[in-house]
Length: 213
Image (cartoon, rainbow, N blue to C red; front, side, top):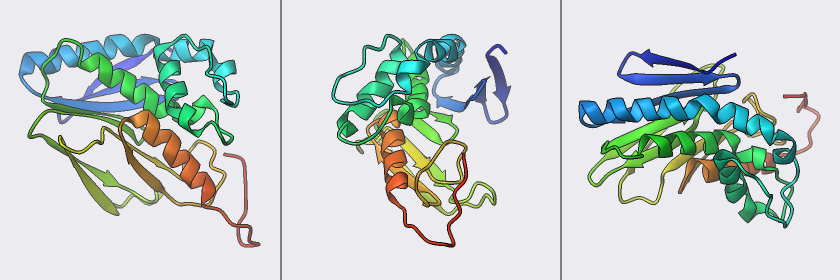
């Protein structure tokens, strides 16, 4: 399967390749937005292949030694997980957020967009210039979508990433949390933090049934 790039309504761009499913949008002058979308599409073409080449190492516990990873997304994953190396964590805990961050970085290369988001299955990278704000909706139960809360992020806030984790997602969660949402400096950090917090929300009880993700 090759990477797929599709324009959606609302002037959004959809990037899909295997397990990666990103919806992004940028605001600004028409030429800048078009350039940002072209850059995002170009960068997206090779991301999955880069990750697959280092997948074996990315699935290993981080430990105290910084992994010798080569790809830019893999390095973002390791950087985000390194502060949590005193517990069991692999760089894969930050994969979705790191991909969103990398696509966002590509969009900003030489463009002058005012604001943007890259939403990779709920792990969201944000970009804001002075005076700009973005609002994100939070859904507790993806099986019965309903806007349970929202959060507005403006330029002066030290937040450029949002991530949600819980037992209902398609990735493994060791806890019983329905949804844990974290705001952080970037999407990769928010991703790993949400994963670890969701894992920690746990209890042993006969009413709780566990099954593979």
